[in-house]
Structures are given as structure tokens and as C-alpha cells.
Length: 460
Image 1 (tube, one colour):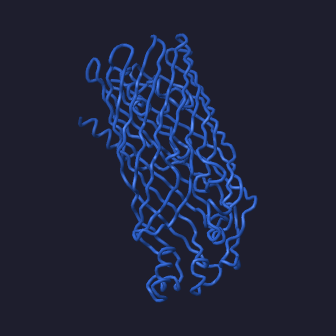
Image 2 (image 1 turned 30 degrees about the vertical axis):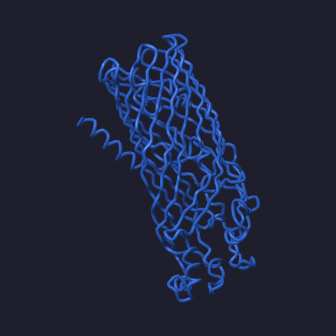
Image 3 (image 1 turned 180 degrees about the vertical axis):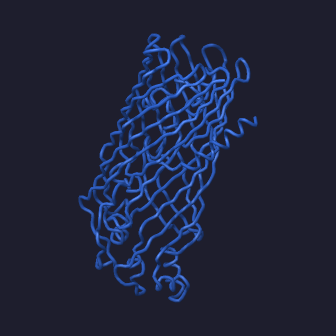
């Protein structure tokens, strides 16, 4: 137990150091939970049960891992998202549409390099009973634009970090059927920044044209969930896996902070312009505690792994993600005023993957895979904070056995993202007044993702 505690603490420290990431599965889900699956584009992971990372994909797979199995994995991820303007309009200083702000540039590449760690340990407690624990990063998002870009009143930096600790058990009913279950303790942190049009907010109290600053909204929370798994072997060379991960309900709490606020608005918030003006100014640009309800989605996966002969395996899966839980993001002040309301209207998605393994020798294995992953959003509701699009995965990888007990797995994937479009031109994405104060943001993104993963597994 002391060894296990040390491993958990080390893994949590490493994950906290790198838990921000890009969006590589649909929405802002991170499927990069091991390196052994990347070469197959994560096809068939709920049936693969190659190492202790099965704790995340299907805990019942631990019954296929005798003794103890330890996995450390790292993922280098480089998303790219560059905006191309096709009709953006300038933000105005007044509700009459005067005092226009400069459009400036396209924001640069909003993607950023991320390093995502994960670690798993499983051990056999008896002939039929197995236990394990995993530390991983199941969701992550980071987009960051140049501070003066044309969409700065809509978004600058958007960052979501999560870390998940997943103790699990599995029971082997017989040589054909195994069951698994786990608890999930998940921590989430979020930070959203954007430029603020102080001229538009303060036009009635004498704030001049062209005055802007910025704000930061940040919050965090913890939640509990669970995951379940079934492993079925209809014949010796065929694994069928079914797994479910529950939704996670968070109530983020934190603060809204404004920077560069002009003196007239400071005076209004302090009460110098009367109670009505004070309340209006505070609710628009005042510092205060905030809360936001967020429900991260449930997932269900059905997978197959079949060994054709001693050299060849084929893997396949279909995974459903309940992104329809993300209807909107409402940031609420401590006085119950709504500070930000962003409609998502996301839909449930499917991810379908197909992979193959080839063993040219006793020490080497080669992997390949393809997958298609639907986006949950649409052109109507897509925002620059998450310019998500459907993506196609192409992946290669392999394994080298360094000893009887140890192996190194590695993989590379390139994700072709269908060019997302953004059209924030008024309702339902923005009110007419907000559109004037922020400007319409209309354009397309050129997006792609590259992923490189490596892991070490050891049995003892």
C-alpha cells in the first residue's frame, strides 16, 4: 500500500503539472489515456486489455492481467487553429454604432503544445479478484489568441484543466465473462479571459470612445462519478468489451476580475452615479465571486478485438458521448445577476475506429488505425473559445519488448479537422446590443492536431 500511495502521489503531481490540453476527441474530451492505443487510433480499447490502462477504458479488462501491471505514459500534443476572416465587423463604442475599434489581426495560432501524463497500476488479489488505480486527464482545453486580435471581445484565453483518480475492482466470473467497476474523483479548473469594451458599457456616464480593458473569469470544483465494464470472450481469440463512464456534475466557484477599468466606471460601481447606475455598472464590469454549473458527459463504448492468427489482430469500436448535457454555460454573480450566458446546444456524438496489429517478431509489434470523431457543435453555436470540428484520425505505432517484464509502447497520430466556421452575428449567439459592443465575428478556421505518445509498462 505504501508503494501504491507513492505512485498515486507522483502521478497526481505530474498530471497537475501538465493537465491543460487541447481538444482531441470531440468537444474538449481527451482520449489520450495510453500510448499503446494511439497507434490504433484508440480503436477497440474497451476490448484490448493489453495493460493496466484498461482501468480507464474498461476495468473488467484487469482480469486479463495476471500479477501486477504498472504503466506510465506521456503524450505530446500540438493542436493548431488559425482564424481566417470572411466578414468580421468592428466593435462600436456606442449603441449608435459609432467610435469603431480597429479589427487588427487574425489572432495567430490559438493552439498550444501540451504534455499530458497518465499512470495506472493493477494487481491480482486472488484467482478471480483484481484491483487497480488510474490517474489521468479526461478533459482539457486551451486556446489562446493574440491580445489585440479582431475577436478579442469574444475570447482571448480559454483553459479547462481536469485530473481524475480512478480506483477500480474487477471480478472474473468464469473463463468467458468478467465484470469491473470503478469510482472517479475528478477535479476541474477553468479560466476564461476576453477584452472588455468599457466605452460601450460606460457610454451613458461619460466613458470616451475606444476605451478597452480585459477580464478574467476563473472557477474550480470537485465531483464524483463511476465507470462500469464487461469483458466477454465468446471464443479464445476474441474479446468483446462494453464500458460506461458516468456524467460528472460540477458547480464551479471562483471570481470575475476586471482590468484597466476607467475612473468613471469605478466611480459608478462605488455609488457616485446613483443606485441604479451603480447596480448596472457592477453587474456588467464589477469584480465579484461567481458560480457556474457544468455537467461533463457520460460515455458508452462497445469494442472488439480478434486475433486472426499469431501475427495479426483486428480491433474495432463505437463510442457514444452524451454531449447534449452541454446546453449552455451561465456564469452567475453572487447577487444572482447573469454575467455571461453562452449557448452551446451541443448534440450527442459517435466515434468509430478500426485498427490492426502485426507482430513481425517476438520483440516487436506494429500498429495502425483510423477513426472518425463527430463534433458536438454546429456553425450556429460554435465559438472561438472552442473552434471544434469533426476530425479523422490516421495513426501508426508499435511496441518493443525490452525484457520479459518490460515493454515500451509508442505512437503517432495526425488529425484532419474539418474546417470549422464561426458566425457570431447576433441571436441566438449574441444579442443585437452585445453584437455591437463586441463586433460580429465571422470566418473559418484552418485546424489540425498532431499527437506523439510513449509509455513504459512493467509486469511483476
